[in-house]
Amino acid sequence: MPLELAIPSRVPGEPLCLGDLELPSRFCLAPLAGYTNLPFRLAVREMGGLGLATTDLVNARALLLGSAKTLDLVMTAPEDRPWAVQIYGADPGELAAAARKVESLGASSIDINMGCPVNKVTKGGGGSALLCHVGKAVDLVRSVVESVAVPVTVKMRLGWDAASHTAPDLARAFQLVGVKAITIHGRTREQGFSGGVDLAGIRKVVEAARGIPVLGNGDVKTLADAARMLAETGCAGLAIGRGAFLNPWFFRQLDAWDRTGDPGPGPDPIERLRFMRRHFHLLSTIRDERFACLTFRKVAGWYCKALKPGHDLQQELVMLRSIDHFETLANRVEERVAQRAGDAWEPVDHAVPVPDGPIAHW
Ligand SMILES: Cc1cc2nc3c(=O)[nH]c(=O)nc-3n(C[C@H](O)[C@H](O)[C@H](O)COP(=O)(O)O)c2cc1C
Image (cartoon, rainbow, N blue to C red):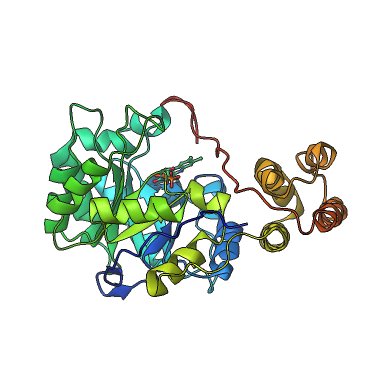
């Protein structure tokens, strides 16, 4: 069953470039800490249509200290290109050194986080705290831009709160110091993940950052959302986070729609099951059995929502124990999906858990 009944008209645009780096499409995977690890990025890339994938946010100091957990976050592979690493911190020297390290690891571009709302990040002066200090934010960005040859981008929110939408001023200043693109999540820090995305606010950033592309971000889950974001904000491309989990072939559909006006076939349970197997396989081969099982438990509910294998199998999947256990359960899910062949499949629309207020942890 098609996810949307009416296909929106395409919104023409230019190819998306970060400086000299032309991306394969205008549709990029936004970082989702805890989820956008190498196995997930590779699985999504294989579905086609992806412009750029970014790592989870990476603490600059921890990266320089060589923390094992942080090095896991910058794990990559030759097929994981173009690949951006997102760094955060508040010290210009540290950010610059971290950027050089990331560049030496092969990053296609470096993204600086100025959107993270959680206290753990903002109390150190990083993430969305930088939205309150334009001069400091610009110094920090300039020091990164001057330290590396690869394109530097910034991902930010509209401002700290409704009374201080600093993003347009920041965007203009970042462009002047050499930033090659900006991703703007159309909410303030105060909003966290609540309320709607402010498309007019995103448009102001697009207008302020003339000369560099702006990627619109927030709540794009369907083709209609994408068309609306592109048309109403004038943004050059989209960064999609939670929508990629609802529909891992969203990028393929968006790219086909962008090129031809036709998104092609919608989600199909057999393909979704294949994607689930592939995702788990990559988790277990690139990392290890324990990591795969623990990570899969976090996303099992999302697959079950789409595949509806029954409460009993869902209960087992969220307690996944081993690779063998996964194989057994995936086969049982497949049997149940096959029994329902020919049924109309409802569009999947369920919430990806978000940090619950600014003090929650990502
Ligand atoms: C669980 C979770 C983790 C996130 N981690 C990051 C992160 O590491 N870096 C970042 O810039 N944004 C992060 N975000 C914000 C997303 O990239 C994105 O801006 C936000 O979810 C809105 O876009 P969406 O509606 O397409 O998901 C995270 C969001 C969620 C829900």
